[in-house]
Image (cartoon, rainbow, N blue to C red; front, side, top):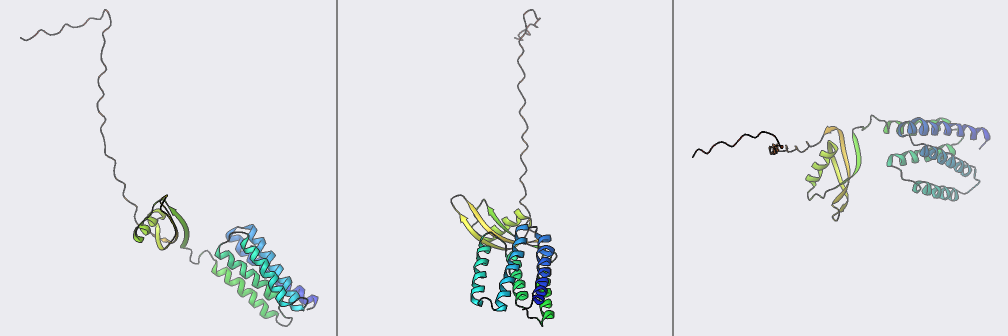
Length: 225
């Protein structure tokens, strides 16, 4: 691979990973650490793939080395499934651009546009925006699935489409569930609150009157008998 081919491949790779990491992922998810991780993994795989394409190192050594680094990176922090998708696309971009031959720039560019475009559309806020997922801990243990679903709909305020019980603690009375629900549909109506009974306050006893010395006191009425 000539230096001109290397620079062209590097330029295509940098444009693609910049659009993916900064133009799409960071603007939608606001995680700077993973944005830098995507960029570093992409450039690292590009370098390894370039050496493999030039025959400087064996294919098995290069793939094994980068697989080890990828496992360490994936296990170093907790990431979601959508972030794993971005991570995989960043790897594929580095690999495609690193081993791209000199006479196939058009095919390489089309693959880059396809990979970045798929992530742009698949992770667009308007695609499946009404589907949400939550891990909820309830302070109750339900015997029936219908009662559990109704309780979740009352707490979340939306229609629950799927419930998966992760853990039940009978000692403390807690239930941990994985919930999928639709934000465009209302859930079960909340329980009506019972009106509190109106209790009239008892009339207070009149304060006793103690006449002072010198005050005139009316004599008691004479006995009728």
